[in-house]
Image (cartoon, rainbow, N blue to C red; front, side):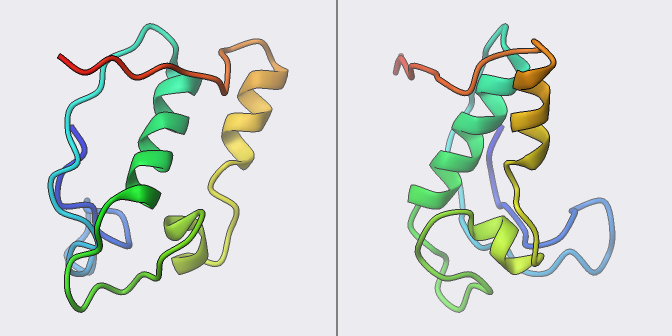
Length: 90
């Protein structure tokens, strides 16, 4: 479920206000592809007014001064999944 995405981990009280609202529900047998799809959908989603994010690629990474794709690229290199995906709306 990609909903009310906050700039910081929502496991803490300091997570902040959401940057995007309800994006949707994803399912996959490929953990790398679903993570990549999730980040891409967050990047394409309409920002919540007053959000701590800007339009463009890797919104969460830019907020946190990091590259959000580094773990996905490493996982692909280890054979854990693929970065390519196909979204099927139901």
